[in-house]
View 1 (spheres, helix red, strand yellow):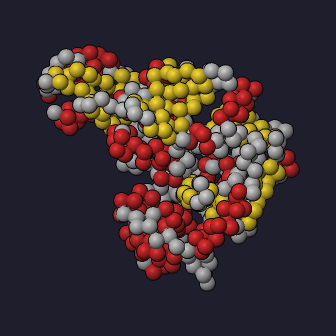
View 2 (cartoon, helix red, strand yellow; view 1 turned 45 degrees about the vertical axis):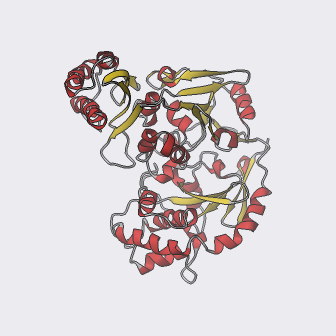
View 3 (cartoon, helix red, strand yellow; view 1 turned 60 degrees about the horizontal axis):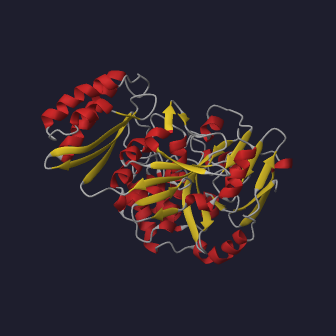
Length: 474
């Protein structure tokens, strides 16, 4: 196994040998860039993916075409760059040869103090390369993860609209064939093992190799997007001795549509899941539309959000309402588990030490079945849920034939309101019956008080979400 990673920094082939390096496998891309001369445009604001000051763009070769996406460099480990192109604000242009998005920022007075500007420019650049004619909603969504305290967003949005009139044509368009050739020369078939003497970091490129490594090193910490795990390094300053990085396995990113279900690879990023769900699973789409920023959704994975078993994870309630299952595998076998049974207690799942989550299966709804998702948080975008919910309902002749009420943020794990479900089943779907059910929800949950909300407030939210569901489906 190789001890090195190779990537492009701009158009320069860059190699890092971790056996003899000042960097460790858990050095973040932000820390790496800040250590270099000529790449200080990237800024550290929050170090947890909330402010966007450290935004970079990473380009990947997808079937002979470069795909550009914006990411928060503060929560990306350096080995995740292997086989990719890293672009920073310095790669776009300079004072004598500005990129169109930089020129547009000047023309619209889109910058004041300048601290956040490089991050904004990189998010704008990603929009410039991804959309020929972005809508206002697409621009707003792309800028949600970048915080501005000086200028305000209006001139920045205007700058994005102005630059995008060029429909993505720039110097990178001309260089793309050569960049693809350089990326194709990087070995992405042989597994990589980075060993510093104190830390081991494994990068498999196939599911089979990943399962083999998991069997051999059952205590290895599994990461893919690492949007959660990275905070243990950047915020808690933890040392992580052994990691198994699944982010380079293309097979785990696949999304398959079948006649009765959609199978999402566990490594599919939240943005890809969101876009795939728009027409098929609208409630999931709505939840993911307020799941962090676009930079986070480009990195966070569906399998990771489920595997973390967080009681305030955004996707479990709505996935349970859709009756989703997870497929877990080890080197010799696989099994399918209903998601509602997968999490057994706080941050604990049925996953065994030698197993990995490989896919999430969401069955398509039968005719007449309704699923809705709700999220209550301090901010519309980018914030952790205070209370979330996923509800499923089927009514025949005014009578409730099927009901599922799942809540997040109300217990140590995502949990259904069983008493409420049993009460409503077989009854008319009326406000009177729903209001009676709301008292049962109080009896079923004993939420905690924390920085996001008090216990009593959470109970009020849970009750009112059910009433809202009734008002939208009556």
